[in-house]
Image 1 (cartoon, rainbow, N blue to C red):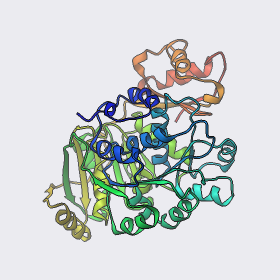
Image 2 (image 1 turned 60 degrees about the horizontal axis):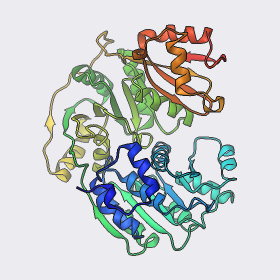
Image 3 (image 1 turned 135 degrees about the horizontal axis):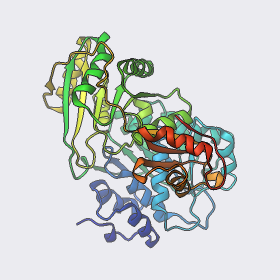
Image 4 (image 1 turned 135 degrees about the vertical axis):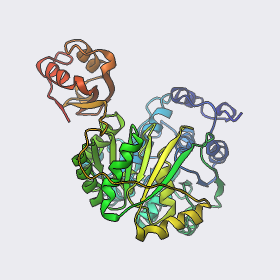
Amino acid sequence: MNTFATLALNPNLSQGLDALGYTEMTPVQAQGLPLILAGSDLIAQAPTGSGKTAAFGLGILHRIDVANARVQALVLCPTRELADQVAREIRKLATGIANFKVLLLTGGVSLRPQLAALGRPPHVIVGTPGRVLELLKQQALKLGSVRTLVLDEADRMLDMGFEEDIRQIAGKTGKERQTLLFSATYPNAIRELAPSLMREPAEITVGAAVEQPIVEQIFHEVDAAQRAGAVAALLLTHHPDSAVVFCNMRRDTEELVTALKGFGFSALALHGDMEQRDRDEILLRFANGSCSVLAASDVAARGLDIKDLAAVINYELPSDPDVYLHRIGRTGRAGRGGMALSLVAAREMPRAHALRDQHGQDYRWASVVPLRTRTSAAPQPKMATLRIDAGKTDKLRAGDILGALTGDAGLKADAIGKIDIFPTRSYVAIRRDMLAQAVKRLSDGKIKGRNFRVRAI
């Protein structure tokens, strides 16, 4: 058995491993961590959900000198959502390390708080290339002490045009640094980039997680003009508790959501043109069960980590077969079954054939009759989201909110779902039939002895 106990890790990391429930290593951890701990540069090809974040996170934290108040590690990610996810896991892994600081640097939010935070340099920075380079150019960020540089989901960063940004950022880091490159695929662009950034890197390739998920893949030929109706029909047929519909174009996400709402479904759009706060709220509402369907562009959904996602629907097949694998990898995680449904217009048949040829399998095809009118049969989410305009800066805790809801508001504990607290706002999932009562009682009453603005979103 490959357990973390077999590694000569910093003893302070055991608390974080225990908090996350990590005991046995995944293949990418078992193969990669000994190399990382030995100081080797590493190219790791591993799929989403394989445990790569813990692999490089533990490697970073093992080498951290908390007494040295300089940036010692930098993790670059393609999207804000993935960067936030990585930063959160590193914080959890570092639970047993006193005075450790990790800073998230991404676009879509004001520079001012990030500039202020850099006044006291963190030990680790997790960020997107655009924002990190912007801060470097303003000379607000110094990376000369970086000992570990991680490129997470490097294939997506290159797809998004970040190659030159990555090169410039890497040039500002320590010359003796360790460079770790993680990627779900290994295209020529990475093969060309790696020699200029790395020194004799070791290479490992691992398959999916130990428990291979079973994803049922079904293709449906449709008229391009009837895609939205076909999505609605598939949702009615399969009744997934949650579904992400991937769209190739940003405008398609908005148009699809408008159409689905017209058919009677609960749906939200997620794309890169949105402000960060709006994106965060949408992801939160989807994750806490307040919305059943998320229409997303590939870039916006990168790093999306929704547990128990029942289905993925391809509104249109992507032109890149590897993107298809990224999409369907969102469902069927942790050994659970999942479903991937794809709509294919006549002009997209070559893409379906390319998938068949590349992945060496024939896919199941089924007919679908697009929905044309509103239906009362559209399933509705069981939860709704309540927003409180107060958060960590107001010393608000989940227990305070729970106490107010079960006390003055008179709700039973089983009517309350996930509670998320941010610096200035808090969000609570409430059983939909109890939402109005919760909003009224909290608006009329107090939380922790104070009045805060409360409303449903």
